[in-house]
Figure: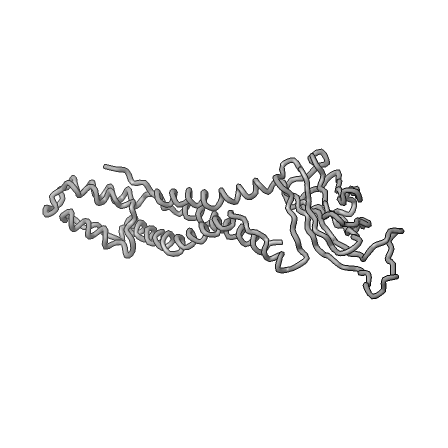
Length: 312
C-alpha cells in the first residue's frame, strides 16, 4: 500500500513561490548592496547678454561671459553599504561638453552636515571631480555649478569598487522622473505574487478548510463508515464526504479497491484495512503550515513591489 504524503502540492507550491518571489528580491538586494547616484535636480538661466546692446559686457570674477546658468546636483549613496575613499578607483567626475565655461562650484548642503567632502574644478578639461572620505547609505552631497552661458550637456564618469555603473538621474522634470526604469525583478515578483494570491484565494484556502472539516468528522465519529459494501460503494462514500475537489491524499483509499471485484462486498480483513487507511488519513496533519508560508512569501512580494513602485 502506498503511503499518504500530505501537502505534496503545497510543498511544491512553496518551492515555486520562493523561486519566483524570494529569489528575485534576494538578487535585487544583492546587486543593490553598493549603489551611487548623481541626481540633477534643477537647471536655471540666471542672465543672458542682449544682442540689442552690443556694448554691454558681462563679467564674472574678471571673466567676460555671455550669460550665466546654474545647475544643481546631488550625489547620494542609494545602496546599502558604505562607500569609502579607498573604493574610489576613479572618483566621480562631471565632464561638460566642449565650449563650456565653468565659473564656480557652490557648496549647498550635505547629509549629514559634518560630511567631509571636496571638489576639484578643472577649467581646461571642463570637469568637476568629487571626493569624499566616507559616504554611508543615505548620505548625500548637494552642490551648484555656475556656468558662463546656457546650461550645457554633461556626462558622469566614475569607477567605484562594487558598483558596475554610477546612475545619473535627471529630476528637473516630473515627466522624466516618472519614466525611471523599473527593474525586471518587480515584474517577476509582481506576477508570481498575483498568481499565488489567486491560488490561495480560489483553491488552497477553500480546500484546506474542506479537508479540515472532513478529517475532524472522521476523527470524532460524526461521519460513520458504512459496513459490508462493495468497492464501488465505498468509492462513492469517499466522493460524497467532499463537497469540493477531492484531495490527492485520499488516493490510497481508491487504490486499495482497484484489484478487488467491484460487485462483491469487502471481507472483514478488507473492511478493517479500509478503516485503518481512513483513520491514518484523518490523523495526518493538514498542509496549513505550507499554506501559511506561501501566504507570508506572497505578502513579502507585495510589499517589495509597492516599495519599488511608490517608495521614496
